[in-house]
Image (cartoon, rainbow over all chains, first blue to last red; front, side, top):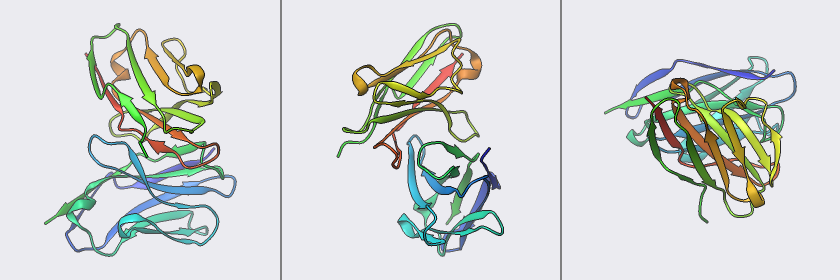
Length: 113
Length: 112
């Protein structure tokens, strides 16, 4: 069975600082990996996805993530945090498609001015 | 292009009452999903439709939850009777077959 573990339910960074949100996955087949963002009272929006092409994936709003098979990780980064990045971020894994997606428990990002 | 629409946005009911949620997917999207998101957790798939057929309902508590997608477009999710532990956000998502899911804003259910 596939699963993801997000380390840290809450992360605080200063505005302008590096954002690093950690995600480790478990999958018995080559996975698809996703990062979604959820703003208060809104649905989930896809930030970026890994689908077995380039291991460094660039997404919207300046975010990127690197697929590291040896570490079973897919950490999300952004060089400089902006106040508008404050939201909850979910890592997710599927068995090689877009359908059977399993979500992590989420990390709330707080950006301190 | 209009996104996934859901209503109501908020609902408060007493335990043992019934409740229904409605979802209108993006036009042309054959696949529709219902997720349950309990506070502090990630979304959990309840049921997946392709057109008006059920693809996966393995995690749907069928003793109290039901869902339908008549005519392969709109869908309703019903809970009867509701329990306290059903308090959650219910998310609807839609996609073209085999493609990226697009999520609606969700319905926040509070069961008292």
